[in-house]
Length: 263
Image (cartoon, helix red, strand yellow):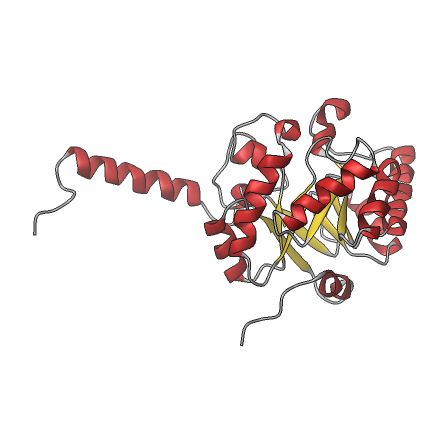
C-alpha cells in the first residue's frame, strides 16, 4: 500500500514529536529520488536561480521559472509535500497579485503550499493567501531575496533589537495563518526561543539543532554545487566528484576508441 501523502496537518502534528526533513529539488528525476528516500517535504526553492540557472542571487528568478520547475518536481513527488517559493516581487505588489501568483503555483505548478519571505510587513499577504485556501510556509532570518538590502549572506538577528524584531515577525506570520516557518542563518539560542514560542513547526537552515526540522539545498549537501557553500552545510555525499569522474572516463574511452565495443 502506498504511503499517505504528507500534508499541512501531518507537518503540524510532527512538532515536538518527530523532526521534519526537508530538501530542495528542481526537476522530476531528483524529486523522485528524494521522495523515494523518504523525505517529508520538498522545497522548490528560488535557489534554482543559483544552482540550476547560474545566477548570482535569487532575485532574477521569475514566476515562469518557478511554475516550470514546480511542475516537474510535483510529477516526481508521490509522498513528500511540495512547497514552492514565491519569487522576488511576486507577493509585494498587492494582495490581489500575491493571491493570483500563489494560486498559479498551486493550480499550474501543482504545489501543495507556497513559501514567502518576510515577517510583519507581509502578514496581510500571508493572511490573504491562506484565506484563499492556499497553505503558506513563512521564512525569516536570512531572506535571500533581500540580499541587496541585507548587504550579503551572513548570520542575522545578532543584536537584541534584531532578535526581538524576529520574534515579533515569527508571531505575526503564525497569527496570519502560516503552517510552518523556515529560520535561516540566525543564532541557535534565538532559533530555540522562536521554536518554543510558536505552535507551528520551525524548519532550520543554519539555525542550529533545536528547530522542529531541517532543510538544505540538495546540490549543497550532495556536493554538486561549489560556487558558494555555506559554512553550516554538511556534505552527505560527493555526487559532483562521481559525475566528473564518470564523464571523464566516458571521454577517455570515446577518444581511445574503447566505447562502444564491437561485439
